[in-house]
Image (cartoon, rainbow, N blue to C red; front, top):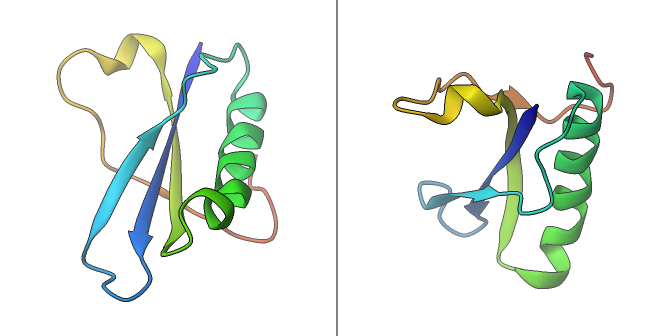
Length: 81
């Protein structure tokens, strides 16, 4: 099971960033998690016009205890998975 996280940053101040956690998941397959990350990113301009999605991360649900790995995936035109 995978949990979706999306990092958003303020357009006017790129140092002000927040992490959004998906409330619909977890997802059984990583492909579904990535698809949900792109869906969240596409909805950001409507709900938070001063922010832009810059990175996403799909983590295994059992990895959420304790420390979370900080390697983020950059949003690209092609999906790497």
